[in-house]
Image (cartoon, rainbow, N blue to C red):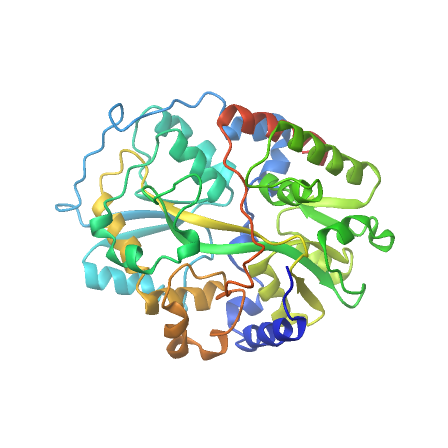
Length: 410
């Protein structure tokens, strides 16, 4: 996949130019750890597997029925990741507007710091068909797929989601794990690629180069979330991350073991690569797009690379768990955030890919400097090499988790 580097740098400068205070502080949703990252590393292998839940109970729409009391209870409990909504001082403007226009009082909890960690909080309740006290939960693709597979998520009423039906980006309409988006609505989308510090190293064009260039040995990091790192290992093996078998996996995990054993990889991280990359303790790393935009506000030497092999793309998805008694209220909020101007306001603050068609035009009013930023509004060419990670059944996933944890030393 090729993107004009001059155009890319110019567009990234546009993104940096806004200088919003939160961005200047280098804080965003991924700053609080994504997937099986820091907290999972601290847990070690037994803790990681316990967090994943090996004894989860599968439910069905018949075995676990939910009653909606939205008409008599205009309330909503929304569980999301920290720093993942627009903020103005002590206010959350879009959320406040929703509450005023809908009459629904929202309790917003920024309590999801890690997919596996949150899974561990709710698995026993969901497995036993008991309420979690949450009406919307926001999970990354692979965990969303897992929860849907367990039958823990309520089917959405699309007649109450006209904005979603009309404005969801076409590229996000049919993930393999929720073909018709019956259970999930994307909140924000992001990319995994490469970042490097131009003060300490020259340009890096591919993931293969990141993993084999002698001058980078011991000076790079990879991500501690399995889908991100193993997606690229599978590509280097010539396999398809969206459709691979156990033989492909074995080759990819052996490849990663070789890089680790040779000392090429210095560490596996959540997004705590930020400090080390800025300081030059790492000269390059596997990185998330929103982090790079944040870093570039303060450090113009930080460069973002679209690897020649492609980009990993992921979404965080709103879902209504079983036994939530406010599903219609949740659907009203989902629908509200798919109004283009609301979506543009949110994306101008979080700086991840906006999943809403029409938001790019609306951004002209919200923040014109972001209209052409490819990390918020990528075009088809930019995303032509993007890939997702294949959904896995639970038994296979547990085996792969063990392999990955063993190699990265979790």
